[in-house]
Length: 274
Image (cartoon, rainbow, N blue to C red; front, side):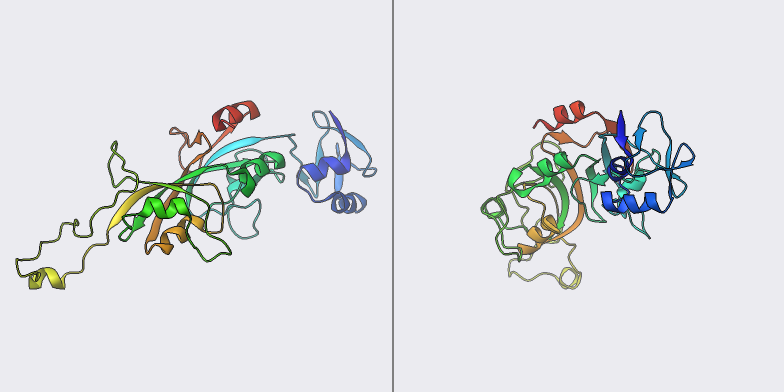
């Protein structure tokens, strides 16, 4: 497969067509060890070796990776100071890859990385309404009507409420998850009040442990800190967050945190179910 050199470099993530033309004119681009003749020079992606400022260009028309994102890594293509999710790809340096959507620095779990812009738009554009499911650890007393509140949309400070979302409160159970359930505030192991309604001095002076819930939330948007802001809107605080599903694609159980799985477009479409 042959491509114009400027298109080849632009597709590989080295800038726009005009930007890569400047690289070529400055003599920073070599083809098989020789200075490129111009932007229109043809290169065979399977035969020719291309370098930019001494860096070998790795080109693949379309690539797809499933990442089990760890904490502390930026959802970005490149950063001058910190590690990004693209840095976790165990292949020659790829400048064309980007994450599909973003996960906060401290959020873990399922993240797709690709160079397929059409797929990214298909999955992340607000109008597409692709469901994304998160498992969260939440501190605070959840409203008894939490399911109804999230289904109706909540005000998180934007110009409009959130789109309808579904929530399942797990609370440590492995099987009987109850949608919209809530643990009573008193069910936290503290001594009960005596018949006068007064707690003992020892109990009253001891700070109560915060109520913690395990929750699964499915949303169809991707607003800034959306999951955290939704729970803050009902008086709770998210202390841990992991994305576990996009459409029908689930995070592979055999994929360790920080590892990636490369798959084909056909495999990805089958897993996504879209």
